[in-house]
Length: 75
Image 1: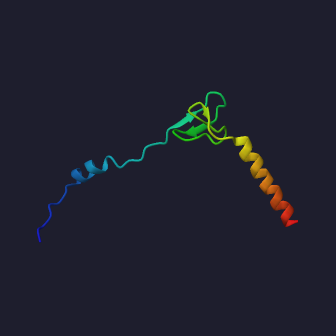
Image 2: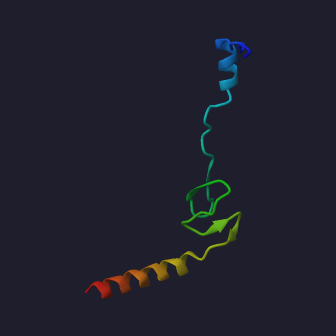
């Protein structure tokens, strides 16, 4: 077997200099002042890049109906 060459501390640290974590980029909606991660749908408004892509009101009514049904079933 061949003996491998050692890496100096400087070589190792130069390689690891790219391992740092980056902060998440957060954007603020101009109309509603809600914050969200970039490239993701804002779950408070259902907007993505200025378009309505998720109907939040529909989801809320469906969730409320499901909760009411669970309460009725438990009683």
